[in-house]
Image 1 (spheres, rainbow, N blue to C red):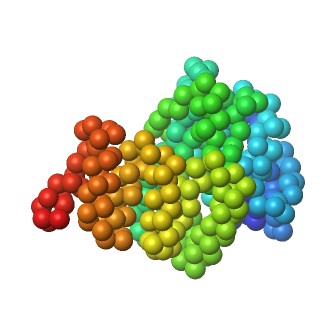
Image 2 (image 1 turned 45 degrees about the vertical axis):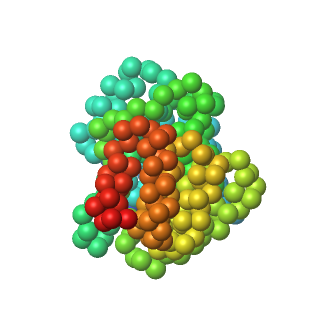
Length: 274
């Protein structure tokens, strides 16, 4: 884990893995509350980490580098492992495959909206070449694939409780945008950063900017059908240009024959006479 000022949620997280993890490693990036002492009370090894330069991958990789177990389970302090999922983790670890596993994450906000679900790779072998990449929106997926591993979906569930304060989320969006721009300038070849940048603009409802980034993505990944589908979505719904949307969806369908989402949007355009 990597943490900072998580005294409100940390205990719930650590309770959820009690009896599952042989060692707990908590990288603290500058807490001023009781977070380090709470972690230590669970028997965790608490490692301070200089976060002057924001780099979430570096902090996570610092934790991995100090792990002695054969497998890594990575959690955030505002997440907890579902009680029924521990046996599934033990079974997968027992198989000892060269694979990273997607966990099903249920995201709960505090504004009574239904939770959303996404999938994140959080369980993977402890290998020297399996490390996170990206200063923000850090992922381990690419390094697992580069190391010859595969990525498998599971029914392992984690529950994620996050703040629904819209202003706090907007500040975080803008913060991440600036860091992503720095990453893109430092390494223009890493087009994965463009995907996250488009998503940040989208969350801020800055659709002109998101469309511009979606166009850049199709330029650097011209054979990626999903990139053309997403660009078509922007031209269809957010920056209307139905002629271009049709061209985008047709391109996605040509690259992936039978692409159901592209076919659906083309049918919508036909129905609208566009």
